[in-house]
Image 1 (spheres, one colour):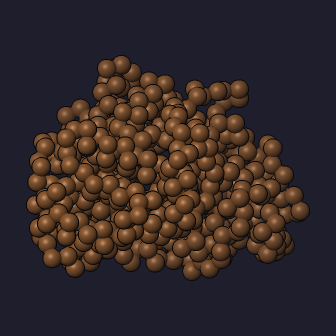
Image 2 (image 1 turned 90 degrees about the vertical axis):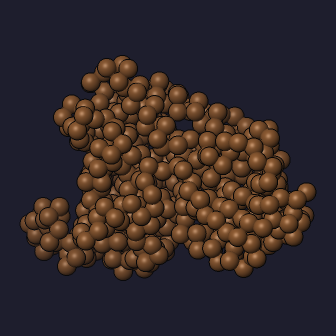
Image 3 (image 1 turned 180 degrees about the horizontal axis):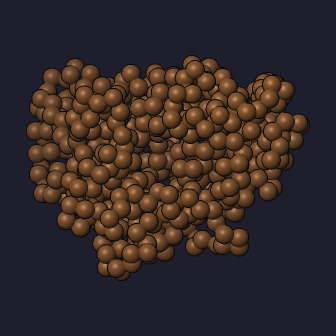
Amino acid sequence: MKYSGIRLILGDQLNIQHSWFSEINKDWLYVLMEVKPESEYVQHHIQKIVGIFQAMRSFERSLADLGHHTRYFKISDTDNKQSFKLNLASLIKETGAERIAYLEPDEYRLDRKLKDDLATLDVGIEMCSSEHFFTERMELRGMFEGKKQFLMENFYRKMRKKHHVLMDNDKPVTGKWNYDHDNRKKLPKDHEPPNPFLVHHDVTALLEEIKGAGINYIGNINPKDFIWPKNRTEALEGLAYFVQDLLFNFGRYQDALSNEFWSIYHSRISFAMNLKLIGPKEVVNIVESTWRELSDIESIAQVEGFIRQILGWREYMRGIYWAKMPEYASLNYFDSKRKLPSWFWTGNTKMNCLSKAIGQSLDYAYAHHIQRLMITGNFALLAGVHPDEVDQWYLGIYIDAFDWVEITNTRGMSQFADGGIVGSKPYVSSAAYIHKMGNHCKTCHYKHKEKVGKDACPFNSLYWNFIDQHREKLEKNPRMTMMYRIWDKYNAETKSELLTKASQVIEDIEKL
């Protein structure tokens, strides 16, 4: 069949509300492709590959049901050349299409690749907005032009005002912008959060296709009971469950760590949002309108904390990404060089907090932000792991990880490899913080109060080693001065014991 144009849709552009789909136009052929290189540029979690492919297939069926003309390349199709460029070239020849339109990719790598690939095809090319984010790609860079720091809080307040979110005229509701200080509690003893929202899909056949294509992957999966949403309806059901049953305890316990509960009060809608099954504007509107309808001033800390993650942090991360790429991807402020220990791929470590966070990540392709920042990320930074190693692990293992949101969170916030573009200080801690936020330490092989000795928690000596090792770069940071005062009060013998212990930890890192 002949078409005048082809519209290419990537696997994370599944926005059925996009203006492209507002009317049926038989001149356009909508094309989606499962191609092997996009599944292997890092080693991804099998649930991530399955989840994206499942959602793409569901989206294509939705378009066809609406009356749009579609072409889908499955990973197992014999005519799939496993290449955007080669598949499009075949379609141009087959359909006589004279133009290709595509939605702006969120990843710098793919943005450059598509521009290069499409430039070789003898057709007109048009890139269109994804119509998803609150901001344009370069909006944040424009906001902070001429300034040394891109402060998230300043950006967040501008966004609140611009989009009139949680505002009373030109002032924040209740008179306060940020309730982060109220959102740092551990779960009370015997407290049980509601069960997490789960969907249930049999993906056995899809898993066999992926295996047959020879795609390498990490992680675990139950193909008879796959729990991640495949379409907008399921994503909205998950959002509704969060708003009804979880939201009003979200902020309070968003930083909590638990041996027993892997989801706690988190929404887990980031996968659906990052595929664009649902949009940030509708999520923020639903959460704010629910709070206003209830007129529950006491819950503002919960609601503001959640909205800040989406309207503030998510948009800010994307803005930093486009303002600083591609140089950002090679930043290594501390000149870290080590490889990740092998147990990052198994969870087989005697450190309970790391075993839980890694094991959960392998089982669910998910961990919440404190597990990522203050457990796995904290350890990698203290141990001097190269940021490339950390980037690839996070990008691969988490179902919601795409380069635009992963690299700024990992290389910036978690590893401080950008030297302070994203975070005002390195997010490092000893075992004291981990013990404060949950019950991991109670059942751990190591003793969280001990700094040296065979049973001392490795986080303790690694923390002080980090403080000592990077003094030249950190001691003038106003948020680090207190730690250097404490370090300077230790006598020479104590310092030597801590640094010797840290050296032993690094030497035996595979046996921890």
